[in-house]
Image 1 (cartoon, one colour):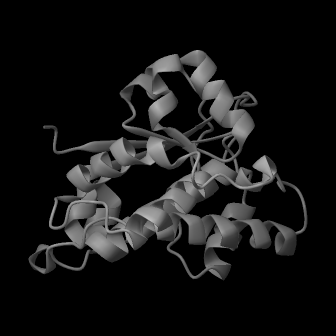
Image 2 (tube, helix red, strand yellow):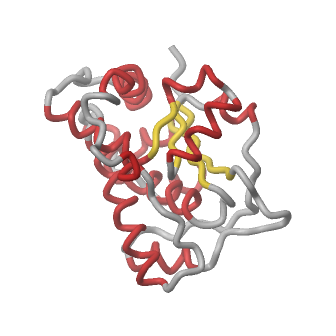
Length: 213
């Protein structure tokens, strides 16, 4: 079994929600798993990327207000089929993005979820202790991806729109922060559902964050 795990975050323009999600996921993985977090590669892309676009400056402000580490700015990246095929898990911001991914690569359906959908499933799996204890981080993530599809129906909300993190790019920072907090909590829930880390692996360091992704 491969010891590396690839997570792809997807939004529309890859300038706000998905770069923010990537930074938040990296933070929660490092905070919980320390040096083992380097076995997970986190990237992001967008379904409709403007040519030459870069990460919106508001992302840095949102991370600051959430008290999360700053993330380097990046050039927005257009979603390509190869990225989806390479990913072990695809996390989208909305159902529309999820549908876009699945239309491009139908076999990715079982490993593609919106962030809020995956968090809801992860919470149920954690409550039922349905993931293997003591597994390495990559193995724990694979167990989550394997178990999650069976819980789409049982955990589905009455309103399907509840699975969407709406696009507030360009809105006042306070409105963006409301959505950012929901995203941060969803990703924390996903990471917290994974098997407990080996304490001997360390508590993480700046070198992990700089070179492990």
